[in-house]
Length: 592
Image 1 (cartoon, rainbow, N blue to C red):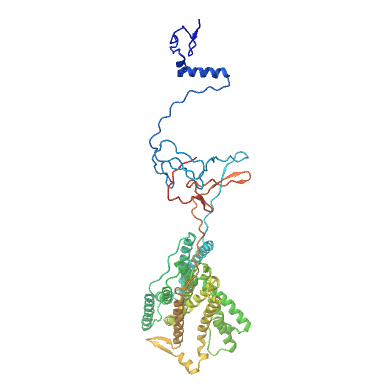
Image 2: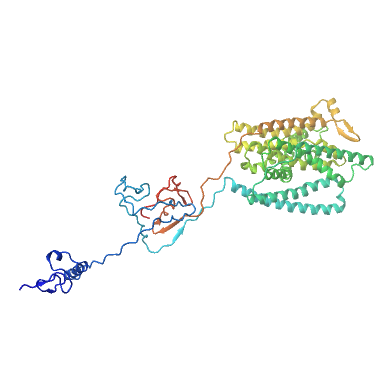
C-alpha cells in the first residue's frame, strides 16, 4: 500500500483522502502547486537557515507609505530672499532627465539647468576642514571710509585757526587790561590812544571769537552756509549817515568851542565811519559775484586782514625801511621822515628817493604780499576764481578797517576830514588783495586755464602797481606845475570843517579802482572753476567678511548668499553683493 503525505505540512494522509487531516490542504496535484502565503514564507526561512548563518534574512515587507498631502505650504519668505510661489501638487516626484536638454514626463516641469545648478550625476559636498589642527576664525578689519581729497589738510587748518584764535583772545584781553590801567592814569580821553586800543584789543577779541567758533566747526567737519550781507546800497546809506552824523557832531562841538569833543563820545561814530564804507564794498562784491563762498572762508579772511596781516606788514616794512636807510646813509632827521610821517616839502634828492622806495615799492610789495595769505592757506578749498577773488578782497577790507580807524584816531580834531578822505580806501586794499588771491589761484588751481601764467603774473603785478601809484599821489606837488600844486594845497570849508582840494585826486583814483572792480566782477561771475572733488565710491560695506586661517594663508570666503546658482558681484572691502534676481521666478529643486 502506498502512503501519501501532505505536500504542505508533511503529515501522513490516509489513502483516498482529499484533504489533509492536519492542515486541511487539498491533496490533489493541481491544488498542491498553489501554496499558502504563510507556508511559503516558512519554507523561505528554512531555506535561508539551511544555507548558512552568513546569509541575510529578508526582512518582512514595510508597511505602505501614507499618502502625501495635496499641497505643501510655501516656504516663509524673509526680507530680501526669494521664495518660490505656491505650485500645485503633482502625484509623485517629477521624472529627472538623464542628460541636458531631455524633457521630463508629460505634465511635469523639467529639471532647471543653468549656471550654478547641479548637472545630472553631479554630487555637491562640503569641502573638508583644513589640515593642521584646530583653528579660529580671523576677521578682516573693515577699512575706515576714505576722506575726500583735501579733508585732512582742512582739518589741520581748522586746528591751526582754533589755536591761533585762542591765543588772539588771550592777547586781546591782556592789551585790554593794560589799556584800562592807562585810561585811569589820564590817557583815556585821547582819540589816538583809543583807536590803538580798538586795533590791538577789540579786533583780536572779536576776530578770535569768530575764529574759535569756525575752527571748532571745521574740526567737527560741519558745513558752513553761504556768505551774504544785506544789500550794498543799504550799508552804503548807513555809512553816509554815519559820516553826516560825524560832520554834524563836529559842527556842534566847534560851535560850542570844544572841538572835536570828548574821545569817548566820538569813538562810536569814528568806528562806524571807518568800517561801514568797507563793508559796503564787500557786500557789493559778493552780490555781484553771486555769493560764491562760505561764511567761514570770508569772515576768517576778513579777521586775518584786521589782526595778523597788519602786524606782519608793520614788522616787514620796518625791517626793509631800516635796510634802505642804512643803504642810503641818511641822517637821523631824514631817517625819522622816512620811518615816520613823510615830509614832501622841499626834500633832498636822497630823501626823496628813500621815501619813494618805502611808499611805492616796499609798502606795496609787503602789504599786497601778506594780505592774500589767508586765501592762500585755503586755496585748494576755493572752487572758482570768483570765490578766490572774494576771499582775498575780504582780507583787504579787514586791513582797511584797522588802518582807517588808526588814521582817524591820529587825526584828532580833523577826524571827520580823515574819514571822508579814506571813504574809498577799502577799494584800494580790497581790490589789491583780491587780485593777489586771484594770482595765487591761477598758479595753484589753474591747470587747463587758457594763458594761466600770464593771468597770474598780470593779477599780481596789477595789485602792486595800483598800490604803488596810489601812494605816489602824495608827491603831486613835486610832479605838477607850481600853480596847480598851490591850488591843490588850498582848503575849502564845509561849514566850519576844513577840507583839501587835493582830496579830488584821491576821489578820482577811487573811481578808477571802482571801475576795475566792476569789470573784474563781470568777468569772474559764472567763470568755471575746479571740478568738485569727491571720495572714491566703494559701495556699501556693512561689515567685514570673515577669512578663515589656514597654515599657508587664508581661504577664500564662502560663496555669496544670493540666489542659488547666480554669479556674484564682489564689492571691494565688504560683503559680496548678490547678483540681481531674475525677473522670471523659477521653482526651487535639486540637491540643497
